[in-house]
Image (tube, rainbow, N blue to C red; front, side, top):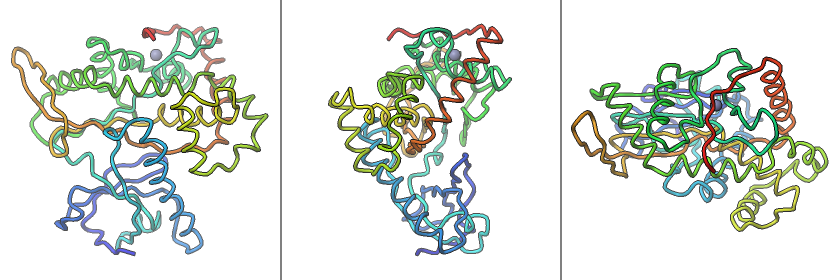
Length: 340
Ligand SMILES: [Zn+2]
């Protein structure tokens, strides 16, 4: 196990399941790297094998399940790493096996967007008019001006409207890190240009939609009936499901449909990280007032973690609660449907 000096790592951020720290020292092998640790208490030796297994599965599914779906260029490589950070109690209590990868926030400007569900499912009723995100925000009592359908529209004005709504009320869907002088106007113009030019959002919504053709309303009864066939799936079975999906095979197989739905949930919950500067590998021409500029950037999709199949029950309950509340409170959606 590698022992790293904790004073050379700094807090980067955290979600429900993970905590991210980044390297600030001068070891060439670690410069520009971030370490993602699962938030499970791992102080006792008995938890270590589970922790190691978790980290290995994460790397495996990223490489062999999600990368073939979203594409090599949009994923950032990670390696499993056994670590001990000396003198850092908070982190040491979390996990002994983390994922070491590129620190995507180590750039002059970085924007992280969690775009959420970008389509309306083929289900009769309110779901045909109101998007899932807007209905869910309504249930939470925190109506948002951000509608994912705008962000995924490919239309400059609507994409900009969506970004401005996110910037105004970021919640946990938007995060900006600016290390160089960059005005808000420049940031909005550049992000709008990137998100309307780069195919990433179009690819993402296609995956969400095609992996979720049946909606949870049809998936849940299927899951209830075939639970025992999907309660302990191996990475190889997930790899096979991705192959079947890509080849359009096994369309009548309930197990395949259930697995596809679970994969779609990852793409509805992942984040898109846009970095300007250090790790940039693409180029874009954009206009700021009357000047044309050229900027290099990179886009990666992060948080590509496999969800647990048994959560289908929870997703169904939540779905029904969201829709019922929207119907009963006569929710008036402002969502604008995008052409298929
Ligand atoms: Zn909406």
